[in-house]
Image (cartoon, rainbow, N blue to C red; front, side):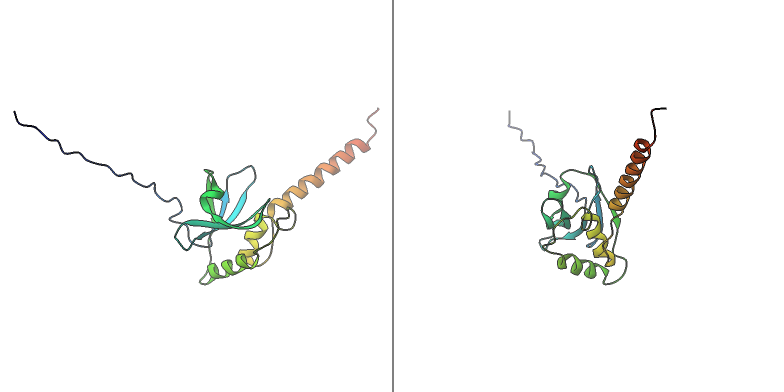
Amino acid sequence: MGEHYFPVRVQRPVAPPDPCAHIPDGAAIRFDTNFDHEALFWRAPDGRAAAFHIDPSLGWRYQLFDEIRIGRRFEVFDRPRFDGHAEMIYQRAIGKRGTKYDLLKWNCQSFVHYCYFGTAYSDGVRVWGLRSLLALCAAGIYFGTDNNN
């Protein structure tokens, strides 16, 4: 009997779809963490996804997207709004190179807001500050009253 040869199909590994393919340069990204960490999406010159952000321990960073994300979910919450806006965002982000992190004055949210609108603003700090103030007032009222009766 003759030998039978069966064709062997070699399947090449298929690269997973790029989760960032739809994201334009300059898009504002929010990562799902213990706190909402925000960054600015940008493609590196070699085409890989990267981002500008303010890191609590390292300050201003330009880092590969996957290094920041580390498996966490993310959402795009804002996109450049007019012609030339992405370039403006980029110039503002680059202009803050070397900036150190400050929870109250210069955090990731205030950095993204500054790059988009030209003024630093952070909802998270304002909400945190208001909650702290209300807690202090409530504690003062509670401990300031005569609880012996």
